[in-house]
Image 1 (spheres, rainbow over the protein chains, first blue to last red):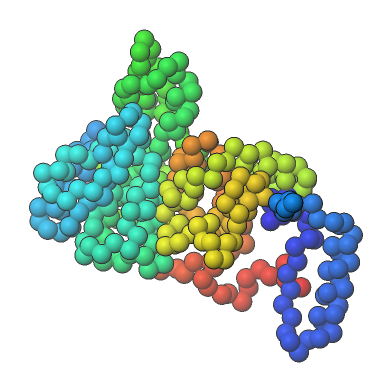
Image 2: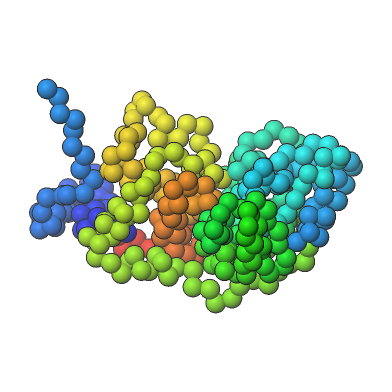
Length: 52
Length: 316
């Protein structure tokens, strides 16, 4: 995806066990922060057909 | 090259007449120059149809998927043989069903490169070991074969078949010191914005004919994801987002399997170099897993096999 032009950091992978609640919170916060820093996504957006 | 044709005809006739195979898949002369077509030979008398020259680019591994014959002879270049290995590993054909007639390959000619350098329609083409001559109404042009090779052939480092039961001709010398990934590195060096724009321009002419998918020996799903309508994974129109989604998903399906045979690029009616997607995956596979597709029947593919030292820095 990044090879194609998606900004590095917008796509993230993690492996969190259902028992690792604190890790989930930490990772979710980090991802949100990283993506917020990148701003709104402009790629892979398809306008919906306008229906009268 | 004529001699290869003769060896192929003789081999096919022998295999068919002794009952060693039920049919031989090879190439015959196409109806237009530089477009040899696949042909299924079932009788020894038909073996004379087979030809071999610089226009046998089509990947014949595409034609053995799920075939029921007990014994099939198949003509295979280096890349075809690697795709046959992939087919065997993926249980699309059994090794025992195949009699591989290997052909050491010196690369296939790019018909577009030749056509572009000729002033009119090409009516006849003939060739020697190193040169190809194209003739048409009022012109004759001769090209060094090395100048008109398909791009993937000029970068090929596996010209000799990796599996074969018969060999039509002496093994050729493999190319050494080829920089296979210069074009991928050029894209990697760009900024994300430049890359997005680059691929937008690359894919702009795509008409979604799916010729690249159909020509690809890896694409054998009974129903392709682009043809599904329940659920519909990707829009079927010309929207640039849908076109791009198709192309990168197609490439992903070839991850760790693509042999860079060039079938997709050759089949494209508008000349898109979609190999830039598959080559990136090929390069990553080589660098991260030391894996090149279709070289051995003994080793499981990179995506099919866990090793404790597999790179996983991208997961946090």
